Amino acid sequence: MSIARSREQTRRMFGIVFYVLLMLVGALLIAFMFIGPALFGSHGELEAMGIGAVLALPPLLVYLWIPWILDRFDPEPLWALLLVLAWGGCAAISFSGLINTLVHEVAQAIGGREFGSFMSACVSAPLTEEFWKGLGIFAMFYFFSREFDGVVDGIIYATFVALGFAAVENITYYARAAIIDTRHEGALFSTFFLRGILAPWGHPLYTSMTGIGFGLARERAGHWKWLGPIGGYFFAAFLHFVWNFAATLSGMLVMVMLPLWFLVVFSFLLILVTLVRRKGRIIRDNLKDEVLLGFLTPYELELATSAFGSLKATFNYGGSAGRAFVGAAAKLGLSKWHTARATKNREATVSEEYIVPLRQELTKLRARVERSLGRPVEKPRVWLPPRQY
Image (cartoon, rainbow, N blue to C red):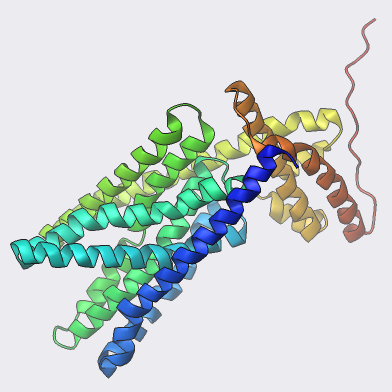
């Protein structure tokens, strides 16, 4: 086993321990701060938490489809997405909630209730919440780097960790609104309308800035290795601060900001689509010579670099075996891309060691495709230059 492969495996093992320990502590904090008071409080509090869960969790299933649909080329593995989703909904929300509560109590003791609310919402929340959500992205970037290819991956992981965070946070907001609704009718509806309908993409948008920063660190060399993540984190905290500051000053100010907010979200989606298409071009550019070398056929190249390649493979190229073929081909293209950039910058990368095994895997998967189809498929051949006379 090479030094680079051994180092990667050590990191993964350390990352698993790091993740499990912090998730266990996060689960205990959630039980202490949220679940315990609801279970042992009044019947109304427990019912309010139930209402919050019913309103917050079903929309989450809808929101998760959007980044999944957009990430058409080399989509992230389900286990990795579930890890960061759970991180946002357990570790990130619990540690952030604990710190925000402590800041609120200390600030309130110093300057009163309004000062405590301001420090908690406008200072502690942006810095603390974006740090803990960003830590989930860092875990994928550092401990599971094989599953982190660039800017698009950073945004996808950021979106999932933020949606997990927002879902649990919304449960608490809806529960409080349900309790208030017994005295002031309409509080629950207005809270759900604002957080669940008008602005459900707040946390994903903020945290995506951190994801972009880690993506730039993965794609580029030099100062980007630390400038990208740090700059992305502070920009995420700034966007978070702007929204919380407006909400703290006045609910009407938030309503005035909504048109601008929608424009920002729409622009970001366009940027994400552009980045996804760029990822597709990178895979294509790095797989073209695989056709000439005799590892892919022209049809397989088109299949692997199509935005709907997995869907086409499901119906026309062996079903699950075809989908696995498309995924392996995309990984091969990205591994070659990482290797070329590392060579250019005189750096080491474990991606180089996966090029040959991925080519061998394509051969095995092609045989599986043939068995699934019940007929032979076109075999790759080496494309020789024309003879010179």
